[in-house]
Amino acid sequence: MPGGYLTTHVLDTARGMPAAGMMIDLFRFDGSQRFHIGYKFTNDDGRTDGPILPKEEFKAGTYELEFRVGAYLKATGQEFPEPFFLDVVPIRFGMSDPMAHYHVPLLVSPFGYSTYRGS
Image (cartoon, rainbow, N blue to C red; front, side):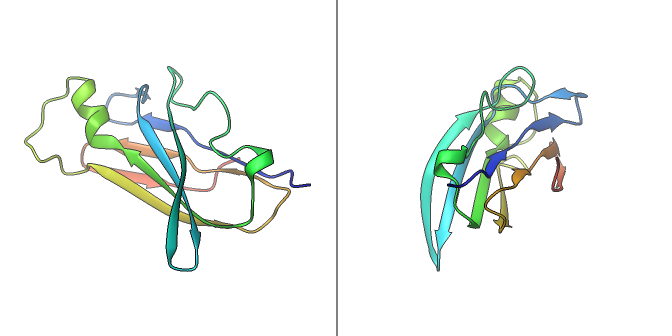
């Protein structure tokens, strides 16, 4: 039985705070086909209320998180010329260890972002 799972969180580096209320979609790849697994919203701490991919659904493979940055910026009242420089930020990554906890955070501002494999 798999023991791995996937979590994420988002920090708004321009405002110096967690990015609450951001929608995140999760996709899994099977060859060249992409399948939507589900979505979650970040809470007040910029995290989802549970794993975005829980243990019982975990499979090793290639995944993609799509962070809805433009909608988040609009909802927070930040004013920028439209279209926003960043709208949807996709992060494609692989998970090979069926027993590991994978954590993929996003640090975002209206004009840039970074990510890494967290813990």
